Length: 175
Image (cartoon, rainbow, N blue to C red):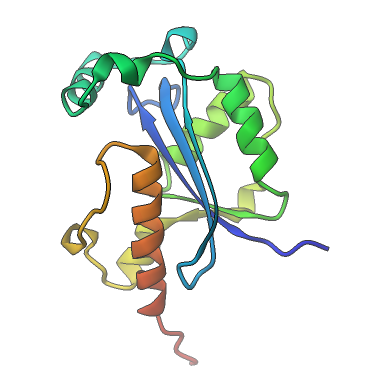
């Protein structure tokens, strides 16, 4: 019997819609003490995601923050290949974390369904980073971001860092 793991997932997208075109997917397998055991970071080919939503304002804002916007949009793998790779990483009982209850995980679930690939996690194992940080009264804006902003890998690693800090600040009170 396998033990469940925690996996932080972060996306870079070209829309805030559930059907958003996905530029990057990152998944970080971590321990609740902050140790990282696996990292998956994929760049996707947006030109092959014609059925996915591209919001002009979101896409332009994202492009303006890139050193090389053309490179950021080209040379990636297909959405279905990325989803299959993510599916290989996630085990049935793993807990998947997203930074917000209705963004990263919701977009991925929509993509899995539209690509007709089974979702690799159970609905009851979805976790929300923002809720934990709120319960711990942790203002994540006060934490230094290490790495490149708007890079799914660096964002996922950052989220693991502040989530595990927030978890240390939550105490259980017996009633």
